[in-house]
Length: 521
Ligand SMILES: [Zn+2]
Ligand SMILES: [Zn+2]
Ligand SMILES: [Zn+2]
Image 1 (spheres, protein in one colour):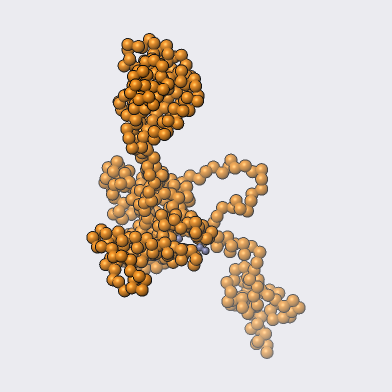
Image 2 (image 1 turned 180 degrees about the horizontal axis):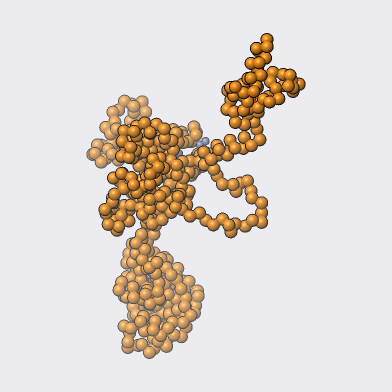
């Protein structure tokens, strides 16, 4: 890509080493060393076998007077070409000063250290070329189709820029095998963003927490100091430890409990293995007073249920009126849809990222909340057994032009589908899987919590039965119940050969026989 909007173009100059010098590799190496010593950086270093006539014409169109001689010399052998950049100064001027005057004799007089002065032999064989101005530098770069050198933006930690990696750390924490990723995604959008911060109280072990607390105390003191200088309060000379606690502090800051990315980077080496794993594997949601608390899994679960309840209740009101209050009590408030990692990636595929593949949090938020609206409607549709297009819900009406609806920055952003992704997503074709090895237990697909429970029950019922005494048979659910019977009783025991589960009902054969026996007595 010639121009990447995420990056910044660097000023550059075009440089060329002519055939006679290119023949001497040690001289080229010397020149390269000098270039680097001058603080210039070399980009797109190439050695070409032979220039084309047009390239030479384009390169030296200003020297029409010597064109024939230049042409024969330039076509006589290999050349080295590259672009030069400088971090602070203008690379065009730096390079021009390094090579010196066009005429090597003049160059030697003016500056004996100049490259043309040292290696040049005549005005034709002055051995080096450099662009005169930004315009010709651009033109000469274009002749050889070099890309414009670009500055790689500095990496800065920013809460509002979220990478997929961080998001997945939050959605799929290592301690939960079946995290409710969709509910966490909604929480992320509504209360987010999630952060790579860790609490000294909640995340780290005892020893590491001490290291963290010590570090945070330093952070807090430097914060107070900077606040004080900002307010123009003079910092008193350090008092002795005895009087330190008595001095009133003019700037009050609440205690800091969270280690940010920079802090973790600084103390990372002194953490134990377990805590290092924690810092690498988890991302959290901040909460609590001054945002100094990390939301626990339990808090997140409760939050998700409460969120779903509110949303479903609101939707139910518009459809069912006051009956909603009763209905809501009977509804399972766990999100019925499940998205895989691929589906979540698919959700964000049209959003743009910065150089480090981070999304803007506000874009993610818009997309997720839109998707949540769709999921909620689909959920409602199942609950009240009514197709989505017949909902009375006013949220579904939208008269905004499609361009605005596609822009995630716009408040009118919408997704062009009415079903959750897991109902529209096409799975990969598994018929082409190789079948020459036996299926492994580990290859088995993960089950959702409810499916797992069902599978377990099925398995239990396949090879076991409830065994109960005959007098308890009525108390237990009658399906799959085997009655226990004393072996030697035979038909003379308490019950006879006709006894079966069906016969346990009132008026059955057994009861009839029982009655007859009592009457005889
Ligand atoms: Zn943590
Ligand atoms: Zn630790
Ligand atoms: Zn430790």
